[in-house]
Length: 120
Image (cartoon, rainbow, N blue to C red; front, side, top):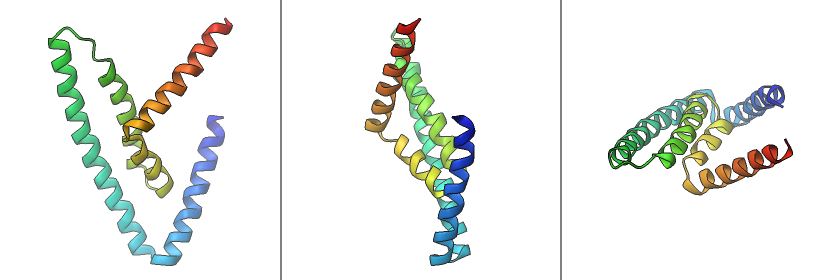
C-alpha cells in the first residue's frame, strides 16, 4: 500500500505540474509552489506555537494534553505535505489544518484500530 502511494502521488503531481505549467507558464507555476510552501511553513509554525502553549497550560493544570498531541500529529503530517512541492499534496496538507477533517480522520483511525484489536 505505501509503495503504491509513493508511486501514484508523484505521478499525480507531475500531471498537475504539466497541466498548470502549460496553462500559466513555468515561472508562475514555480512561484505558486514557493508561495504555498512559505504559507504552509508560516501556518505550521503559528499553529505549532499555539499547540505548545495550550499543552503547557493544560499540563500545569494537571490535564493530559490529548487534543494537543492529536493536533501535533496532524500538524506534523500537514507540514510535511505543505513543504513537499506539489499542488495535490498542498491541497491535502491545507485540508488537514481544518478541524472537521482532523476529527473525521481521527474517528476513522480510531475505528480502524479498534476493529484490528478486536480480532486478536
